[in-house]
Length: 79
Image 1 (tube, helix red, strand yellow):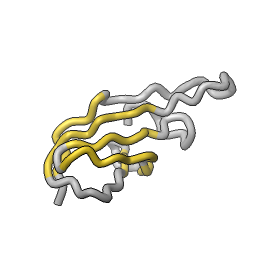
Image 2 (cartoon, rainbow, N blue to C red):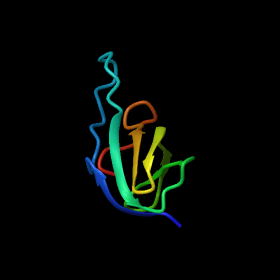
Image 3 (tube, rainbow, N blue to C red):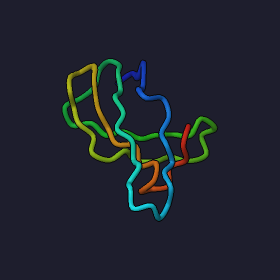
Image 4 (cartoon, helix red, strand yellow):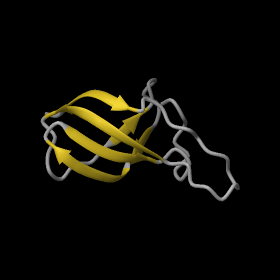
């Protein structure tokens, strides 16, 4: 199975609702064993909520990029 070793940046800004600016955050995920058709699921540290990342891109078997839906899906910041 894939293994994640680092996520940069480690947290996302939640945005300001109604300001007209989408504050979803692009993150780089480093690790090993990534597949060419990846999906990324973000899980709160306490395990209570899960959010699917959007626009996931495969860079290599060690690098992915993904958009954290911090504002569009109300994914809490620093989860």
